[in-house]
Image (cartoon, rainbow, N blue to C red; front, side):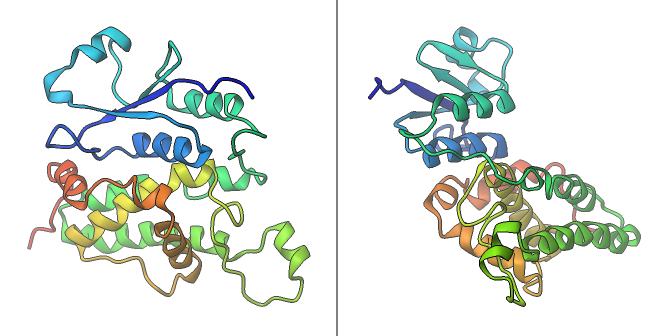
Length: 239
């Protein structure tokens, strides 16, 4: 067995300068490393203090970035590809999806959410909410539509509720989407009193299953941290 790599993940710190801050990209990499089962060090970076570690290791960069042995990686997508290649079976779990659709489903939800939550005008709210809800419905339909291997296993089933995007285990696709869905859930409740409808069974089941996984639930920032990050951009509707 080869010598395990020395890995340090640098992520954005919270308001207190110590705990994990609101950053879906940081959480994405945190989840990947945890799911891989590799030993690594997590270092939070207080951006208000412009720490020397940034100047020394990744000048001009923002967290997250990765130190792999003595090699600094700053591009999130390339970090994901690098970790999947370097931390491979049989020693580490494979996390890539078997179905390419899993990688892009839900990719437009966050953009639609941003338009919805940043709008202060009551007259526009219904239209923006319907557009945002349509994106959630589309994701829900994907989660309720059987994948080829599920059809093979249960050809006569009338209802499919898949645990995760690509099947029965968390993958890179979940590491990308779940942190964004968590932000959406917290911010929409605060500023629009909007909850993801329980009628969307596929999506509800997906989130319920995901929150039971330590790799997701324990990497989420505190709700207060998310709301602090959004207080300058999210808008209450003007009466």
